[in-house]
Amino acid sequence: MIHTRQTRRFRDFSLRTKLLVCLFAFIIGPLLVATVLINYQLGIAETQTAYQEQLNTLKGSEAGLANIVAETEFLSLNILSDETVQDLSRYYDTMSYTDIERRRASLFVFSLPTLLRYKPYITSVSLSRHGEVMFQYAQASQTDALVYREDTSISAQAYALEGRGFWTPAYALQNRIREAGPRYVISFIRAIMDIYTYGEYTAIQRISLDEAVFSTYYSNLSTSTDTITMIVDGSGGIVSSTDKSLLANSMSVEPFIQEVLQSDEGFFPLHYGGNAYVAFHYTIANPGWHVVQLVRRSSFSGERTIINKFVSFSIAICILFGILFSWVQNRSMINPLRMLEEQMQKVKLGDFDVQISSSSEDEIGRLCHLFTDMASTVKELIDRVYKKELRAKEAQLIALQAQINPHFLYNTLDSIYWLAYRNKDHKVAAQIAALSSVFRQALSSDDRLTTIRNELENLKSYMVIQDGLVGDRIKMELDVPEELKEYQTMKLVLQPLVENSITHGLERKIEGGTITVRIAKSGDDIRFIVRDDGLGTDGTQISKILDGLIETEGALALRNLHDRVRLQYGPQYGVRFESAKGKGTTVVVRIPAMTLVQEEDMALGTDVSPIVTFESERS
Image (tube, rainbow, N blue to C red):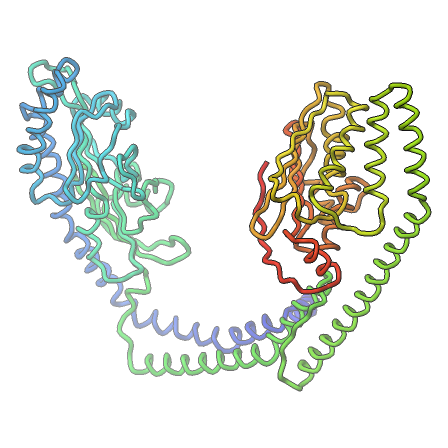
């Protein structure tokens, strides 16, 4: 039963997976096992000796690192005992600006350049009080290490140690005057005590070492690119590392670091980051740092014998032929089948523009050709049905317009208008006139196109009608350059958008609001932008309805307008909707900027080659 289940599972694998499984199971796998066994037998005798030699090489950095620590701490004592530093720290709050600058100049010109000579690893020295920088100095090539304010948390720790200095792990220097990427430093911090008043600490001294320069004192101990060398403090914090991604992190949770902290020196195997390493480490007594080096275990393989070389060469030849066999199978079988599968997925999602290039005339090649022909035929049939439905809908619209006698409506409205006028009901007369204008624009069937000027006049007539319904609660603002008013547009673009703003955004808002209509030219496009400060709605939901991702009866006017624009100008144009509850709504309609002749050419299918660009309009 188990054998049958495994066989069935293998049978369900893809062809590529089956090929790789067989290649590894019957060729590469056994050869690798043989190689591992041989290498293990040959290298086990030399491993311990190689480990001890590597540890001795690592300890060659001990004198240099200890010297840097000692020189830095000695420099700290020299600085805090300097008379100018003591004066600046003691009287900083009461000194005049001139006296402060005189002492800063003395330190800058005479004291610090001499003290920092031949110390390229020191990047900057800072004196501060309560975070305020009293004085700072940086090496000439490292002025980006200057800061405008010190970290007060470090100051609190320094004051608590009462004059005893401490070393920080590597950290990104904050509050730098000139940012140029993260700058990692290791700092020695000490509170400066007034030499004339025991127990009174007047400032904080920070001496920062450039981590990048500091790491060069030990990074050249191994030529292997897989080696990771780091220095950790007693709590597991990273002081320095050749792997810069570890900086400003703590390694205390790593088991091998815990083992390092429990002994002075030694080596042991471990797994880190999915790889097998050997950890070598020793301790710098002051300041209690542990220098750790992780070297790939594979770097300690012993010398290979002639038989082992022959076996390795044989394995390489077998693997080469296996890879060649896999490449041939991929090229002739798997890749064509994968391409066919991808094209099938496109057809499944409704994209019938299938392109499968296959010069082969075998079974797979013929299958690709047949599928391409089938997709092309289906696409042609769908296009026929789609165009037939469009013509049917257009015929229904024309029939509906024909059933409505425009002249009857105009004459009736005209009679009502004069009746209201004679009765001196001028407000009703104005609304009747506006309604007549709207009907005349909506029911005219001679052309689907008009000018932006006419579209604006139709919108104004519509707002006259709305004024009778909602009064002065809703105001409309127009922002339309005069030079755009003679451009062409579809009929009834703005009125549905304004109606949407009133019905869904402002009608239920007690205090009313404002609708802003702006028309702008952007490149070769014209954008109609209608904003309101109404109640707003779920913009994501409406956008999904416009994109056809949700089938619903909602947003009918916007969806109809979106479909009309796309049918008239192409799928790259249409309506974009942005809204949020309580924040108003913005609707953008984008059409090509064209004259009437260009619009008619596009409607007739003539290629006018507009340059289409779309820039999002944010509300």
